[in-house]
Length: 367
Image 1 (cartoon, rainbow, N blue to C red):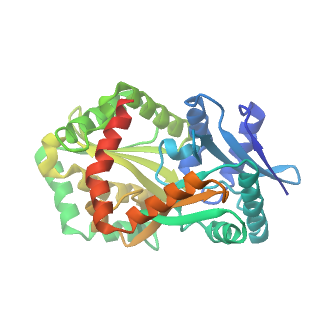
Image 2 (image 1 turned 120 degrees about the horizontal axis):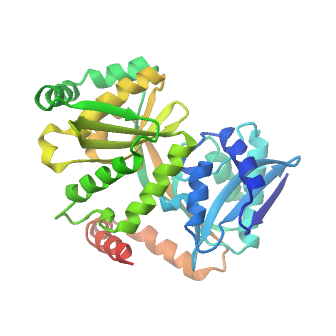
Image 3 (image 1 turned 135 degrees about the vertical axis):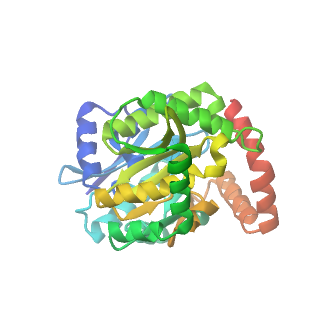
């Protein structure tokens, strides 16, 4: 097994190998999809750092990172629900453990300070990663960050039955159909992709107008970036655009991403003029019906604990932040300990979450 770090722009040969790896990878994360990472790479001022693992000359793992001034993050941090290591599903437990040990040795050799956001603690490889981390001589800290509520059923039919059994969901669907002659859509091709995205962004802007967290889509550059992401997912064949339409007007939206037997409920919004009809709730019922036809039985609501998700979710997956550096990186270690102390103080953390973070996000968007 050989683990290396590349700082050169990936060539076509690499992307062909990576595409095969991702196709055979554990979980096949949509946030590590080849076309998406190619697009993300094009947004950087310098090439991403790619940690590659070869076994017998075959690429068995590849993880993309972007380098900041003081720390290194997953490239997929640019837009994600969860950041995953891409590992071939044929790897044995021993090989996975060895990979992570060699990966951490490279982190120390490269003198990286890693801030790994949105780490899916349910990933099958995570226990091996944590074991290798404990055995290394690196500084590390693991902090709870967020959650991914999901609804998981024994079969696609059971998933639909669980959601269809809710009187609230059936009422919202019937009310839209009877009073607004609404039509539900699941678009898997590129038909009117740009127009759909423009309608999504317009609704999102109006939905969050006059709130403490106005929409990032007020910035035209964010709309262009968002279009690039959805175009990449569409090119990969994993994008499903769910929407509710009345006439020519779409009033509810969900960006769905295929992940094996799962749909990731990635982004959602609705037209505030139709708030009383709850199109965002009604569309979940339609998604479950569509998933039943596609033989999919897990709906992952993505990052965040919004209350509407728990109306149907029956499980909650943990997302964590993992901080890793050499023991001599005093500034990174002190920063980590400060973050931990804030996180462990409910009053201070709530002040940060409700007051400081929204202002910081607005300033970031103005950059």
